[in-house]
Length: 469
Image (cartoon, rainbow, N blue to C red; front, side, top):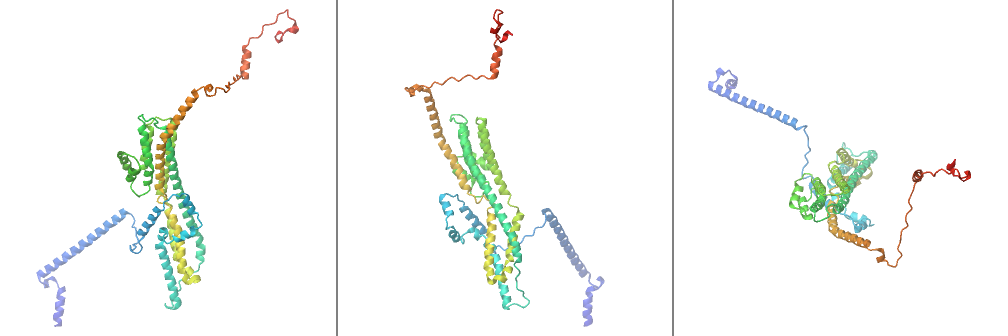
């Protein structure tokens, strides 16, 4: 029986002559098909890997991105709420606002709104993580102190000397960040204020210098100039904001025709297009060259404002500095509980949370005002430019008629004689001014006068003049 089993087992490895021909052929065919399929799969795999390698090389270096669970922190909703709060706080101060801003009760008012502030609420994820780390360190150390953990478990603490040395560096980073961001904010506000001033000035120039006669063919050009001037602040605003629709604003706040609106919307750089139309309107009108140069100076100011705003929008504070500040803040507060455990104990948790909220809030303010356009009241500034231009247009006719009447009255008064106005008053007769003669004139007159004739010989020598000698 054992020999039979051995024979049956060894028959599988015998020569082909010892097996049936059909079985041998079938086994060989299966082996061949399997080998070919395996080789084909390996070849396809190698080809696919080469293709992926070539594709990766074409795309550039491999970028590894950390995968964060979406449900961990819903930062998108927090950021949307923060930006909505910024839109609602775009205000321009008046007298009452300044009184409220400088009142002695501002401290209590600001503390009252600390829990409803969207900017502080946006710090929730970062502050929560830092507070959670502090709670974990405190809980671990308490368990070690109570003996609930093995003896090899260490107490997580460190000296506070590193924080004493690095705190000034963090302060300098935050101060520079906020100062640089406020400089950008202040520059943007000055440029938009200058745009408002130049809009008023060029409106006055257009009304005074361009096509004063309504019956000339140039008068519609001036009206077209004013219409595009009122549209310029809107195109300027929508060039830097993604809120609302420029077409709706143009139809609601201007008197542009459908063709003019279509021309503005079809342009890629809409503020430049509006300035070009205004420049062509000015060129088509006959004006004094001095007035034309003055208006061109305002066009140059508009172009400078657009370029400066684009520079602020497209060029943030160097990203390396922003990353350095963020990393420094995170690492500083991650290891802060280790330094606070020895002196504070359980108070490490609230102190870490408070420090994180303060420092992260300073950095958040610097990031928010780095891009000043969503914060500035651009809607109010654009509306002021439009209303000021419209007011000047409505007042111009009355002022023009008043000035013309005054000119006619002065001409009529000058035509009336002084005796008719004041018949009994003595008439003033100006004295004739003496003719002015220089020394050169006197010498020329003396040379032009002929010399006296020579004296007669009968005249005595004593009576002769100087020419007798």
